[in-house]
Length: 211
Picture 1 (cartoon, one colour):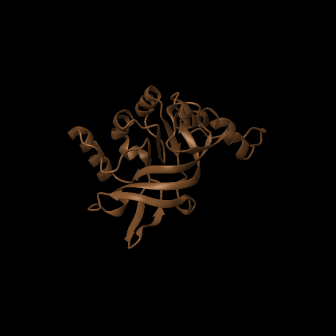
Picture 2 (tube, rainbow, N blue to C red; picture 1 turned 120 degrees about the vertical axis):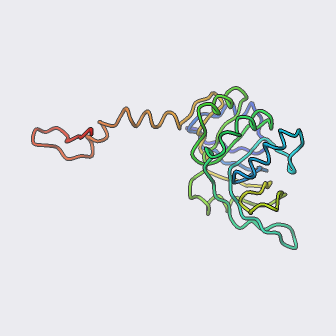
Picture 3 (tube, helix red, strand yellow; picture 1 turned 90 degrees about the vertical axis):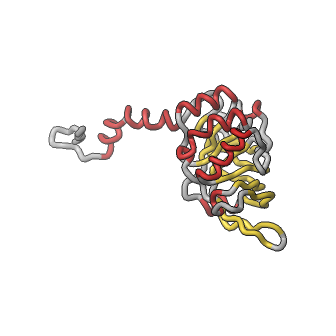
């Protein structure tokens, strides 16, 4: 698997060269939010034909974050990835209408959304669950934050990152999804795996129970 160092904005031609399983270190500006309220408001912007308060720049990450206002600007306390499947109903539309080339988060997206990503030319980057210390260290600036009436995690923000990663290409622009492949591979190898770890019975065969 390849290791890629990318800087936003990333071209669609570049993301089409990424393959499921590649590692990515991401730099540049990214747009983040971490909850249903932020996604609902973005969806309302599309419904009403109005621009979001922060311009979507092609890279959208499901990344709850705590940003505090200071005299000199903003202070980022921490970021931590959240489960993308909670927002799956919105993402296909966002990929198309916000012209996204990168979506990121934790846990993957549905087969239907992966099909939209293939159609448009977009990848899903998987962030390390529980990787808050590593990810937070990559934040170098908070450019903007909007919807400050919402709890901090649900706000829309533009962050500048440097070498955020490693992020794994979980779904590539050809539609290949590790989230579909890995469970199928594990099921197909179940008996082999159990045989390698369970004690042998008197007949020399691994004591594999299938029920």
